[in-house]
Length: 498
Image (cartoon, rainbow, N blue to C red; front, side, top):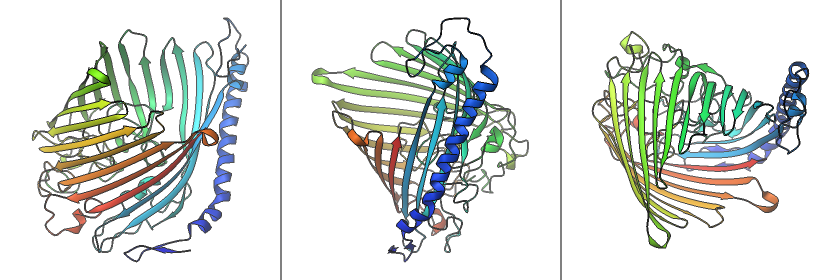
């Protein structure tokens, strides 16, 4: 069976493609499982079995007591997931449309803690079951695909099957409710986070600590020296990881030259979160990207309870950035953050909630002091106005206004969100304050999620529809339209977690 889009683009027979790739997928599952199991058992047998027991054994994940370190590994836990993802982008007439169907999975092993020490290892595989040719440029504009390639490997659009990655390999020490982790892992911060909206999330390698034993306080932070961004299969140094996604323009309008030209020893992060009473939450973060830039982030969220289980919601956030040294490279055309540059951002949110309903209005202002810069390879923006499938990173002197309504059932199995926003960016010719020459736009998102139960326990489904319309001028340049505005974008996702 063959399907044809309105633009004349044909879909292949997906059933036949599935059958063709089924054996390869099962082989990947077996290889990944054997590799993880072999690594875990070998680590236990070769390194840990001779360590003596000096204290009472700790309780494992299964509830049994480990008498030694080898038993801690044997009583460890496997878990994993499978994901199938269909994505479709329908651009304006006369511009290319795209689609992709991906399938993959992950497998992880975590030992039980013994004297507070545990070990984790995990990997992920991914397949392109069917897609447009994501390496071909649009004939009218010369633009490459933007969204669908994110399901696979942005560095190699022709890569359809060699999409494996070691996701986790860490050693952890836990005490009470706190822990410190060394190695490959996944962390969540305002600017470095997993942004898990494709086939694989962003992962980091470094030393990370979480302190959770202080009353009403959480302190977390560490040092990262390697990053494997979402939509890639390799690990990169901090400097190399910036510029894997579209690089944008220098303030003078020339192409940015920072990809593969940035030097940095790593990223230092420190965050403090305080619960001030029952209704106020305060968090302060600092992100130090050695030799490139520094970001300070603060946010306050307040919930005011009303009668009959109603509540009002308020939030405020502020961000300040400044360049460090030469911003990554002493040559201005090859630097990431212009020497002496800075940016300032202010955001606010207000809303109402009752039972499963929530309504929110938000505003973000990036001042004209300079572009707000945050490597897109590292995570999504922390703004109240953030809407999936677009960002205002790279802009200065911009205004964002959004409204959203959320509803979920009492059992929380179904959740629906509708969001609409206007994003007023500088003119596309104002390169100093519009890094990606992106026109002002408006956007509608409809996000439906359902969690199954019973015999389908572990299965989760998501449907995301995105529409984006143009507000700003593009001066007849369709390259500023394709994959940016005047489009519809559909996502169908099935996740099975075990």
